[in-house]
Length: 299
Figure 1 (cartoon, rainbow, N blue to C red):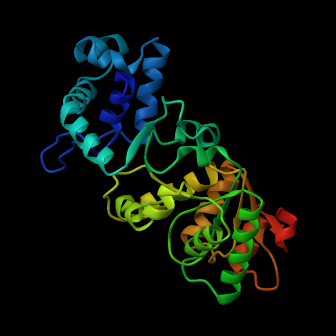
Figure 2 (cartoon, helix red, strand yellow):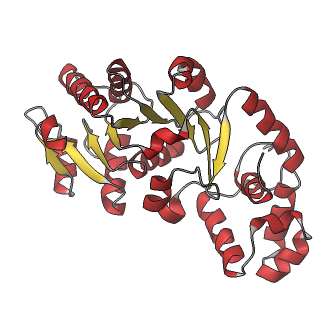
């Protein structure tokens, strides 16, 4: 059961109950929502007031434009349809947590602050995120040496009871997931598309409390480059530290995501730096990544 405050956040930011073919205004982006949230906070108002007073009255108090007032009204007015969508997802064990909820991943909120997603869809045990976590990231197309390194790393983390955080893609992500699970470890996966399909595929691990899948976008969304890049930040923001196993030379998502991690200081970033290190890895070290020549240095 959601509080009115949480329902307001979901109504303003999610795609639930939203018909892109007929709606005039799109839900708020993270940045747009945070600006609005600050206006409520500075006025000493909770967002639940949107269900208690007229939208026009609230808009006048916050000095909102007529366009923004209309946008909020249209988004809030779809609450009943949104609640119906929420019920359908709950039946499939997919839930929503907002930044106003004490269950929201605290590491993500502390590291990303106003850039943290206002809400997350998830399937699994959120408590996994409160354990020690290490991100393991890298290219979708990996060499046998990189996959072997990833297997050893993920297995070692699992033996230390450290949850592995990754993005669910093929290559390094998948190797890290499978190796950690084989060693009895736990997995946190931020997916950039089709979270529902990913959850169904990994239902056994989710039911066993070994894996949680999360996404900031609709569980049935298709892949977009923007969502993938945003997902990369969530991986780093949920960890004490992370390891880049392989990265292309400034062009791929692994390099760009790691660069943002370093720039925003989302977590301590280690970069594989052995005799097989890629050119991208070398450049990430030049940008401030910590060289990792052996797994023992991390543990």
